[in-house]
Image (cartoon, helix red, strand yellow):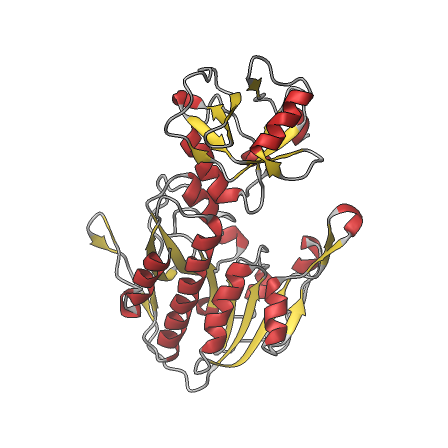
Length: 384
């Protein structure tokens, strides 16, 4: 990944906003040729690691702003009986660099009525040097909130090449679908009725998506580049050189829906080993892959990989598994005769363990017959 990232960063920022075409016709661009005498006042809204990476680039660009304010999610109790306090990474970052941090209400209905922090709650014509930026914020800004900013001063950093992968999980779906290229876009925020992630594009950066990419490393690459892209757009906006253009027609562009528990359920009859590994790379940071035993207990599959030379004795029936001594892994037959190798397992209510130890436990429970075990492809009880 280091070599790929170095290649990305070596590319000139002057090429970030190349003029795309559709069917050989140049798309209409809007130009903004009025330079600003004052620096921006920026409300930055985010929550997670992607937000932090974008924010770091913006915070370092001191020539752009004279006031920078964060709005982020409140602390939340998680885990069993609320034993763990989850704190927004962006909140911690903002506090560490002494940037004012405001927390939004817990619920979406309350958030819709929330008043923006000063100086962004205005009456009358919005100041041209007031800007709102969202990056992996997880909330939709209401119409009255957006009205506090001029239409050309509302930006979202979206980690895809829009209009592809509009929605809340674009990085995950790009990996799931084995895309060869992804990227990041600076998109103008519209009101909800006008469309989510559907506004004019102010800048894009294309990134090759290598075959073994994991979500965390791709998120970090896109966060760094997205932050630099945002800074480039804002610098052009301040001197009157920025321009935007409508998004290309959706046509058959894929959508990036929320990752749910159902996405983590593995069906060995319909999924190939390669697709299962892609799923692991895409979503395991938030939802470990699971399969199901005959006892209806779930088992998490950790660090899986495609096995090129499966044992001859393994049944051709998808979902059949055995322990392979040479690799010290559990090997499972998948769709299209492919085979998955799993070195680490975590059974429901048990600790993470090596495949050999898990296999010995399964034998002790009488789940192994003639050296094989069969996983179920039914998850109704899990998803209830």
